[in-house]
Length: 112
Length: 111
Image (spheres, rainbow over the protein chains, first blue to last red):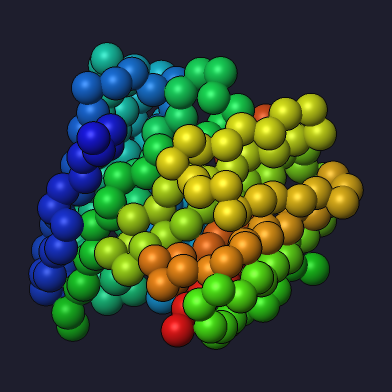
């Protein structure tokens, strides 16, 4: 059973377009993190959201945590070729010693 | 000044062999982790460890064993390697239940 459903799995868009990636679960998480991974490298943290309803912005990236802390979204405005990569959401449950449950990732390709 | 480092970067070996992957962090974190990323890029926790507690994902075969000589190192030893063990293995570290920092990964290929 996949605890974190991430969609879409693949996304290919033109430079300048907007996009949204979704991460959904039936479980409640104490925090949810978004990572970006480039080929041959480890995931790099973009943001952590901890409060239900929280919205965080990182330049052209907007992250939202659902009110019930079961889902999250990542919205990218005016995508650039440099945004190309694998985006991963990961949830942490309280008392789990920080063990993260990862979604299956969204492979984003932004064409110039 | 690398925060989390792993060696080797690439490991190619025959079925049945025993191998180790090393991980070191210089962040002063108290918790370290091992993840496995399969060919479909799915990342799955294998172990988490601090100096008090080892948490093992129940799906990990007992051929895999983490070994921590000290707080800054968590090595992964694998016995009797199988074809299905081929994957990229990532080490990570954090303060307990805080942001995790990942190493660059070790690509293991079992022939």
